[in-house]
Length: 354
Ligand SMILES: [Fe+2]
Ligand SMILES: [Fe+2]
Image (cartoon, rainbow, N blue to C red; front, side):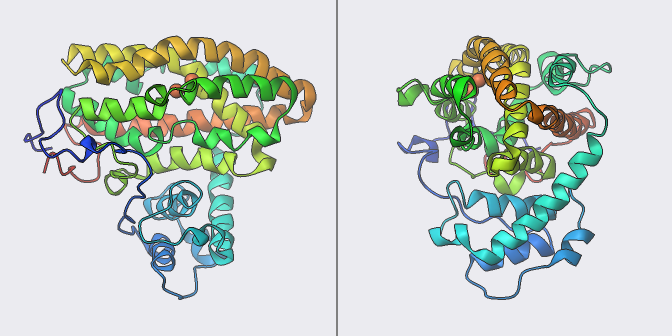
């Protein structure tokens, strides 16, 4: 990466982040396509009427590849903020929904193959707390060796999801009841700021980005993040948008809440070691405390509550948590691998660095 990044601790002079709704309502631009599938989705969203790819084209694509993951991400984002210039009605375009189903099938098939074997939810959760034996864990790497530039890159990678933190989990609320619903709602109340806009976790993430001199607009860095990041973000929508995958969604949520507190404290420490603005560390400080409570609530109320009502979902909960670990490991491997090789974890320099 080049070294002309803006001063740390302050946004760039003309920071778009100074706008009040910096990560708010504005829809991002459609990113450049990365192959046949994403070009077709993008073309449809731009108003072209050409036929969309069918099962053969999807079957030929790498399920974890740049093209398929971007195509899926474009389809999913229509359910969140959409894209600039794309009509809201595109969310329910039947042709796009048909293609999305094919992409999801291909993605889930690969995930199922990668998560073969049987384990109970509790076994999977315990395994998530075990540090990778080779010490290559991303949070641990950043704690020990991370440079400010790498911490900024990590903030860019995570921005695809963190600027909408917890939104995909909210889809599950109408599909839960009893203890699971009460527990899930309690955790989400925290995630969404307990009634205070400035405490919404997505907003704290935007503050973190500003503190690192990054642009906190929603979807702004989509063009520079690679498939592992998109896959990790897509997994939440894959689970969240389908009632049939409510067990997997709860498993995902539990996996994230359980593994968050130690990782969050390491990220906060790494940011402070590198002299980053306090606003940047605050996002992680908040998660050290909040997620220790969330972990207990998720295990006892959400997971146990769900399985008391629907014991048949245990395998789905375990699958959701394992798939989360699988994709988080892939993301970590890709980023740490790049950094260890002295390269960037981004597909291209950000405009702040160019
Ligand atoms: Fe959070
Ligand atoms: Fe949390």
